[in-house]
Image 1: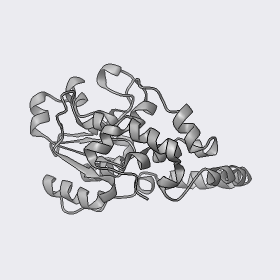
Image 2: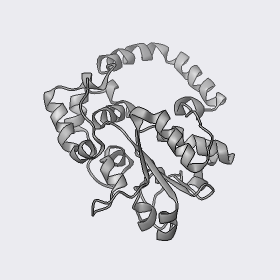
Image 3: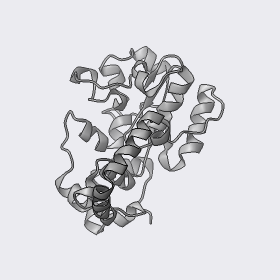
Image 4: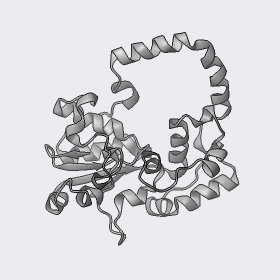
Length: 238
């Protein structure tokens, strides 16, 4: 997210509550989720400008894709949030609706998107790649933790001169009443179908991210996100 009004750049790593953070800026600027494009929150079909969702630009892409000058990048406050890699990939598994189809281990070993220009891959890309350049230099001024989301966002607010702002729940705050009403009607229509499908979802869904793993899948993610784990100090914590 690029906000010239407040001279800041939010490097939105998928599955780290980024939409809740973006919604704070939309409210302050009098924008809605439908009119969010001025903050560079829009789809993209030109690889030269960045990924399919410009909200998920890496820190370096803001410059290399021509969205800001090097001088602007240096002068703007740049921040991001990271998340425990084992928990983050579980969140992605659920976000894509896979519990309805396959178990988590099958997803990890057979259905992870390959590196390339796709929103699916951008969602599982190592967090380190979003924030560091090829020489290992951190490109943002502040890295918060999803696990300490609200308190760390208060630090962002203080840096930007905002009052302490409680983050909204994105899934609730970004849906219009009309949208919610439509969803409710659809759910009533397909209630019987939901009962059947939800049985399979529950079968592949657990309360804590650690319950999704056996030793093999745990080590697979540990290797996949080795830099994230080392750089941001995460561990597999029951």
